[in-house]
Length: 147
Image (cartoon, rainbow, N blue to C red; front, side, top):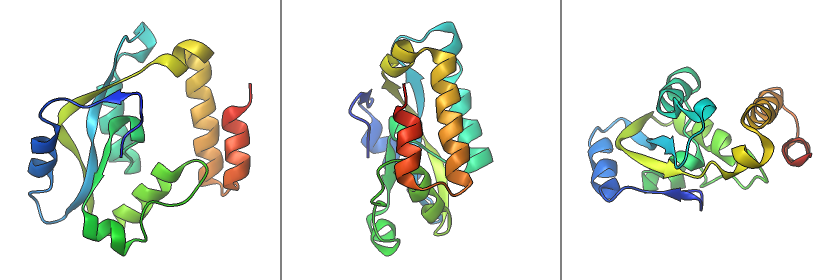
């Protein structure tokens, strides 16, 4: 699963196969960099590691891969208007381990340039905290899309 504005490296299939070589690995994502990073967007590789280690998350702009049988067992990709990646990772963590594949994807920084880096990160944090507090998906979407 991949955001439309994210590009995979030529060796991404081999990287997924290497990652899934361990039986307890149910899925994961890739390391990520921005296509044209501003100073505040540098360090995204470190954020990928922190997000996985601290929160057990990989996001769509990192690319998400999952063992098919595990995805079927957990009921597929959650049908949510927003935060489906968070919910998917929550379910996957119950089935096994998530990892970062040994390859890097490149994603667009367009949204950060449009809204501003700090403002975009603040919005993402607000929505993430609201998700963890149990706010309904439609309200999360409203918060995320608010101008």
